[in-house]
Image (cartoon, rainbow, N blue to C red; front, side, top):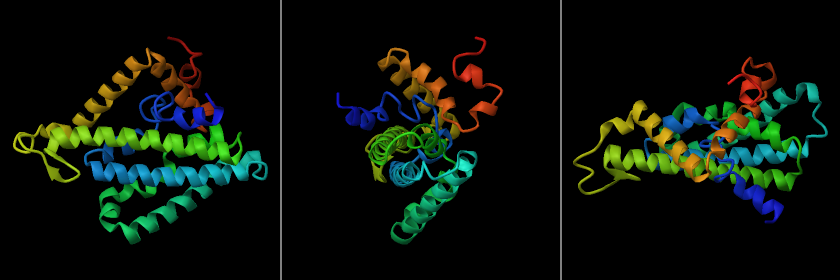
Amino acid sequence: MNARLKTLLNGILKENPVLVLVLGTCPSLAISTQASSALGMGIAATLVLLGSNMAISALRNVIPDKVRIPCYVILIAGFVTMTEMIVEAYAYELYKALGIYLPLIVVNCIILGRAEMYANKNGVVDSALDAIGMGLGFTLTLLVMASLREVFGSGTWFGMEIPVLADNPISILTMAPGGFFVFGCLIALVNKIMKGQALKGARAGCAACPSCSDCPNANEAQGGGAA
């Protein structure tokens, strides 16, 4: 397979940021009660990821290594601010639905993790492809989670009522326990499809965190600690 095509497709399943690397869990659980909100969050995060990956890759030889993390945060915050202003101006209902989770894309571990692990080490084109792949993986995961929770928890899909299910919703799926249940089931499904490789990916996900070297569980997260 072409290397660039592989980079693009990695984020969809093999290195899915939510179900394999277990990053971005907070917005995934919080926003996945409505399919429309999940789709909007996925697109917004993808745009920020694409912009920040390309900018950081282009500036990787200019940014001093000692201050790279603050510089990454500033660049990411700039793209988040632009995205937030665009969503507020042209999709106000989505802006209200996403609430605080839209500006919190700044601290989404997927964004900062890809900047540190990929964009900092690769060219602009490859970094853009990585961002698109990771963004697609994040968006598809959110959409699947939200669809399951909305269809069975509210009896609707993108606001449209579904016969029978609308009169017999499983309300707990719209609550936090339901979110964790669906999340766990999807991780188990992906791990089954990948024949256990998802568990190794989850450990590698911690290595994407810029604070990994200072974390007391870093060795265990990287597979070098005690069982």
